Length: 158
Image (cartoon, rainbow, N blue to C red; front, side, top):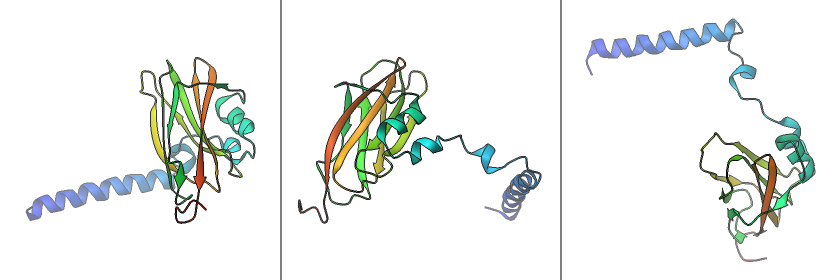
């Protein structure tokens, strides 16, 4: 890269940073407007049905085997439990992941676009042994499935 190219890259970067700085200073770009709205009440709720009501509009679910949860039977470390949720239900709008044993059970809510494949993965934190609950909103109704995960220290089953 020659000197002129380096200078141009530096000037472009400086101009972009300066523009963002001016927007922030002027109050045009604030964290409130940059970040998407999140359901704060849902993530602070102490009960599963309350968390679902605040995030998906209802706390009533119907059991469904069309929701697949891939999670370990025994988690060696409750701080990073890998979970994948997928569904064959038509027109999935949202997927929520909860842990029944946590003080605040709601862990994640995914808003899916039209024609999006209903398949999400994340790592969750589990306080202790309990159920991982996947709730899928499809056609305005909530469907749920659960999988028990045993949280151990060192993976020794105890």
